[in-house]
Each structure stands twice: as C-alpha cells, then as structure tokens.
Length: 101
Image (cartoon, rainbow, N blue to C red; front, side):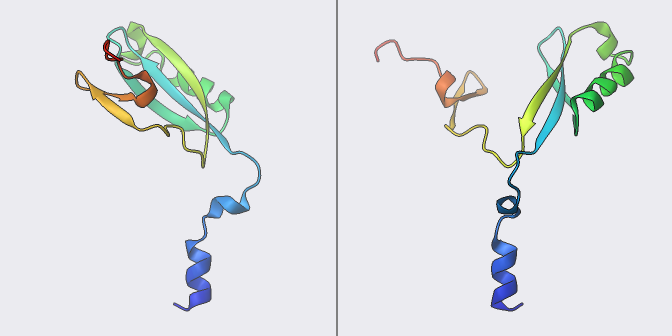
C-alpha cells in the first residue's frame, strides 16, 4: 500500500459527513428493571413498528415499558469516565458522594 492510500484510509469517514446521523434505539424495561435493547432503527416509525411486532411475545406481553431513544452517530455519549458502585458501572457524574467531601 502506498502512502497516499494509507493516509486516505486512516482519515475518519465521519469528516465527510456534515449532517448529524440519527438512529433510534428501541429498549424494553421489564418489571424487574432489566433493560433489553430490541433493535436499532433508521426512523422512529420503524422502531414503533417493531414494538407492534414484539409486544405480544412472551416476556414483552407481561408488562414493562418500551422506550424509543434518539441516538446521534459519530458522537461520544459517555465522556466523563465511570466508577464502580455496588457492582454497577455508573457515569462519573452519578457516582455517590462521599459525605466527608
């Protein structure tokens, strides 16, 4: 591979995209608080149609909530690091405060 091709391959493709690219994540949270990512869709309408396809399936039909979350591609969404607390990863901004601080 020559240098010109190597530098072209190393350049992130996102630099060529000027508009934000949005996708829609469909989540289900059951009565125990367990979250499941059902899928990622190109439009909110596609995600809504997915709810219709799964809402009568075992587990989903037993309750809980569906959520469609808008998500921008090529963007860092968790930028502050994380801490472990009681077995869970928490965003740094959500970590429990030490009362002595």
